[in-house]
Image (cartoon, rainbow over all chains, first blue to last red; front, side, top):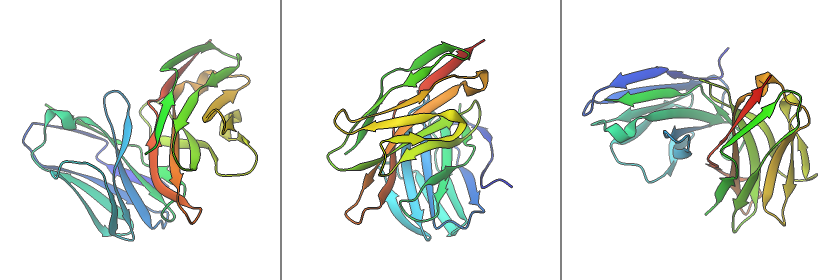
Length: 112
Length: 118
């Protein structure tokens, strides 16, 4: 059983489009996160939700909007995609805020 | 704010040789320290973590790391590597709050690509 899953695994789209990436965890964790890994492999946190409440919102363009319908899901919606959004996006979860994080397999987004 | 510097972007090594991947961090407050491994086209997997106690931490797959507070380092070591250890390794820190628990946000280094040659 996959603990943290993301869909899709690969996403190729054109500039200006709107797309969503879905994340689900079956670990019963309270906290979920989104990280972005750029072309230089630099990983940086974007958002974190604890019990469906947004607790971290780093300096991210407001074209990015996370949505947590329940504790097991944290989706990332991106409007008006730009070339610079091309990256690998990782979802993660932890039992509680501040506990060990478990990462999903990543979604490679390519904007052309 | 915290920052993490991994001193080597790439480390080539022959199979069965020892390896050390270096990590230095900067923080004005106490931190927890982590090493993650990313195999090709996969997500990140926790190798080991330092929260408190003994400064020598043992992790999975025969890896260990030593926390050196005076040098603000957390270097990762393995005495004998295998081909299967070829991957990218990330050092990360998480700030500790007044309650003694992690702040939760991980700050990562730039990664070190370990390539093990036969």
